[in-house]
Length: 372
Image (tube, rainbow, N blue to C red; front, side, top):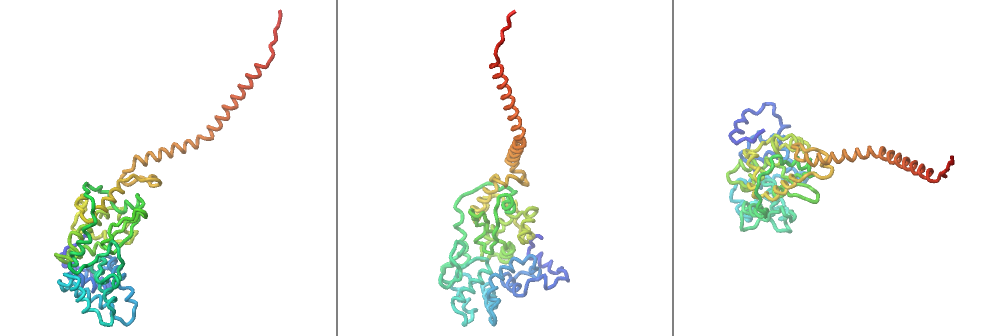
């Protein structure tokens, strides 16, 4: 399934199979959230197979309040999202957003609870941890992925500032087309931690050999196609999609199996109008360039230890693979020949002892002189 333009999706909406049931749609509350964040979406966008990941993201932000009785907390968050998306000026400054949020939050809720709900609404909308209140009021912990929204900037400017300082090196060159995250996990011993926070995308823990990957490609694509000037700037959204296109090739069998094992379906979204070939120049990455360069270095390393036992699919490790197995074969033959060598050595020793005994016997034998 390739990503469709809005006009294509509206046309396809007219041909949705009549047997589509509520079981194949997201729950009503998730549909309302999606439509509030992206007003241009049509009903076909709520298919559970493509929106399952976003549904889990929404659930993670509302599961604790969903279990509380006799409250309208979910309605409050939904109202915050609607006001934020319908009034452009709300995100022009932090004070504007706080004023709008206070108008939607019931007076029965404490100020700290109101701040917490405001931050949840922003997290559901943008998949980013954005601190609205002060450290004491905020429910967010400090960390490298936290965005501090200062009063003097718009939210968009705060996001740009947060992503601007990630790259420290100038790296150029062509990326090996065989690079994929499934390859790194299969042949280089890496593991994947899936995240709903764009800021954590491609963070690498070298000690644990874990790559953190943002899992909601559809979220990025929806923000791109729903607005000419999305709150998360287009270069950030586009480059995040490019990294996913690079690391998860569309027609790669190893990648398909890897995503199926991890329960991810975003590969079916295709390249979202951004061909993978254009992502093979490492210089085209600005935000995640250093992290991509590190993964390329890992890709270019020769496998070590037990990884040498398997020939990689492209044969790139044929020489160390061949050398390793020849050494194993020579060692195996040497072990097989050991008993024969021991027997041969014992036989040689016996021959030597016999020869020595004969020599001694001849030396000690008296000479007899016969006179005629």
